[in-house]
Image (tube, rainbow, N blue to C red; front, side):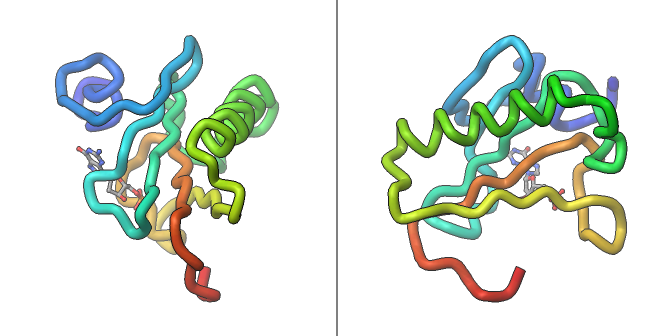
Length: 111
Ligand code: DGP
């Protein structure tokens, strides 16, 4: 999508600090980190949110393969959290599906 900030990052029109990429997705550091490790895992296809993932096991599978890969590569043996916000009540601010990978400290009990 032309005016989508994550599509622009995927196309290289906006710089990002990329940590991983494959044919289906890209992962880069969040601009406003909420933990020492705060990576966004973003499918390259413009999908609005997790509400649109029905039947898209190719995407959900690729995302969680990337999570496992990054957890190993970044030595996240103490654990991590994966979050995807959806829609207004979920406080999704960028309407392009993405998963937050948070780690590097004991995270809040609050979701
Ligand atoms: P959410 O609120 O779940 O939609 O999360 C969107 C996240 O995207 C938020 O944590 C900040 C991050 N973000 C927004 N714009 C940019 C950007 O231009 N670059 C990077 N690296 N992150 C961004």
